[in-house]
Length: 251
Image (cartoon, rainbow, N blue to C red):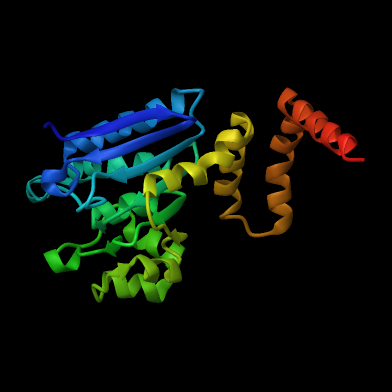
């Protein structure tokens, strides 16, 4: 079978699966380009409220394809990065369902999501220096931002992998999921699916903007305009009336 990004839009969720089991889902230039296209298609689909990224078991993603890396110049490296960067800049909420090893660029793919759910066999591995490579794709920034400088140093400088439970303790994963990981990711996405899409997109924009602000007052200023817009929306009016009706029925 041809390696591909399998994209399935159902129930308000775009499930994007890196399907290259022969290489443990290593990212080639073609797969990275397909991943970009799949993320953009999810953003265009008005029915999609969340994106779940996973890999065909047993791996999540073994990193960049080594043959592509071996011949890569700057343009080639940036082309490989584009797959996980598309996830990082996605305007929709994103979840990485990490069921196996996330290595190198595969670690970057997992870290690019808003939330990571880990299966019991998940493993988070940098492996750049083991191959004689400097980390790339923003991995040093992502790991420090999520797990702090000490854990980032342990991953990158000392090659210390994290299993699922350790990743949760370090802040790289939210929780460990026993059983069907994709089903758990869909269930996790359900509140986002139920939310009005425009308010959801605006909230993610605000999260990104306020993360770098200096003061609480600055965050209030960022949030006020989209909150006013949501107050004037028909979705808010409908939901407010439904809530009032429930209160009246119980009084």
